[in-house]
Image (cartoon, rainbow over all chains, first blue to last red; front, side):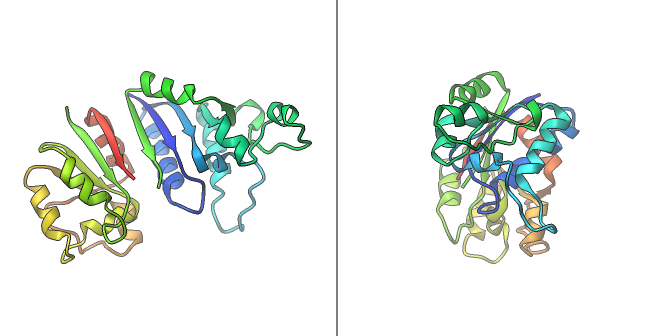
Length: 134
Length: 101
């Protein structure tokens, strides 16, 4: 079965991203397909490449990127939500005249920035859309 | 159409559980996750509402979240404990998922 996942909360503040991650991992292990994971609102903070939690704590952003790399997942970050919160890829940094960018792209295997249409498409194309938030 | 309802808020903090119980139909499934697992505790002032719901709806609690909050062993009779695989199965078995945030 094809699942779409929506994450509306950032890491550490709320359990939503952890629950979504564990759910996604279990679904993949069962042989289900993850059509897309969409990060919206504060959920875009899950896409930062410069998060540096203590060594004995999980790195939520990195966990998502690693899972994406392993299973070729489509991790999409809402562009408007991301730009507001200072989550930029190289292209968006150039457009907004910023010298740095911080989206975890894992050389094409991590997150990508796109529009809300990607969430609608996930709702249409996936058999189930599961929302995690606060 | 069978719907899986997820509740992730403590009933002592927010009204998500009350909304879910009021609006979910007979035959649907309700899963408590995150702080929502406090609703599954026996002896609380919400226990009667949950027991009433169990009569015509299937009620589940996510085991890892239940254990993390010390609620294990204090669960209302008739509630089924599931792990993340069980969560995935519930999503697959039902036609859609409603998250009561």
